[in-house]
Every structure is written in structure tokens, then in C-alpha cells.
Image (tube, rainbow, N blue to C red):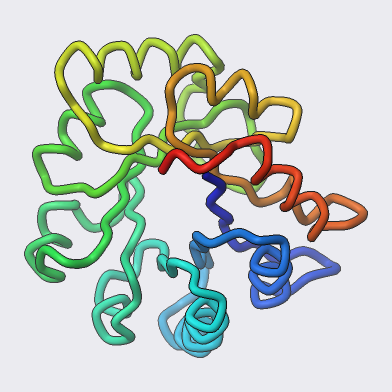
Length: 207
């Protein structure tokens, strides 16, 4: 499965990027406006949620747990420096999706015990769309984490993230992950809608 993380470029706004991803068939959208304040994010989130609802797509907001509850979005994704997953679960209750960023098997263990719904695991390689990057995992990193999860009976879905392109997806999916998150590789393409369709075909529907 492909997850799309919104991004803005000189060519596309956040809403433009989400609209293109949806038109390409993506059905899991994360609104990520990392340096924006609540008042900037809310109107974009309202429009993005409407677009996702109309397309039958899951709508996740990065970081802003209270906004997720306010809008009744599908869920939230939390980075290592955001609100703790356990606190978000207490605030949101059992029915919301909560994703957690992980770089190691220990991160995965902690997220599982805190009540995460899925893991965003990365980075696969260096990416310019994220600041303060954790150590790059590469294929071996994913293989080792998935192997450890299987050995320990941890069944959380894992989504690979971080500088991933179409050429990387077959090898990444063979490590056992359930999906791939993309952003820049779609928006840099000459035809973002066709690129999204290509990525979805490569990743399949495992999530």
C-alpha cells in the first residue's frame, strides 16, 4: 500500500499535492505541515479531509492530536518528538488510528506497548523533506527490524519512509514491510498522477 505525505513545492500547494495523490488512486493521505501553526493548518486540514472523504481515503494529520479530535479525522501520525503515543491514545480513545515514527526495533516495541496502530519506519535513505533525520536504514535495516518483529510476535503494520522512489519499492516490499510512504518522488514527476498509479501497482495492497 502507498501512503502519501503532503508537501508543498514551487509548483504545488499542500492541497494540490493531496488532490494529485488522490487522483492517482492513493487512499491514505497524511497532511504534514511541520512548521505551521494550528491556525495555518486547520483550514488546509478541513479541505484535505473533505477531499479524502469524497475519495473514500483515510485522512491522517501529522502531530496535531487535538485537531484530529476536533475534526474527527481518521487519525494522527506522531514523530519521536511529538506527543507521546500513550498520551494521544488516552486523549483520542481506541477508535482513532495512531501511527508512530520508528528507527529501531526498540522504537517499535515502545510504540506497540503505548497503543500505536502502525509504524512509520525510516528513513530508507537521506531525504530533504524532513529535518533532524535519524540514521538511514537501507534494505538491511528493514530486513532486521521485520525479522525481529516476527521473532517477537509483533504484528503492527510497518510503512517504509524516506526518499523512496519507484525503483526502490520492489526490494523494500520484499523485506516484509506492509507499505511505503512517498512524497517528493510523486511531486517531482512530470506526471504526478501517473507516477502515483505506478507506485501503487508496485507496492500492492498489503496494509
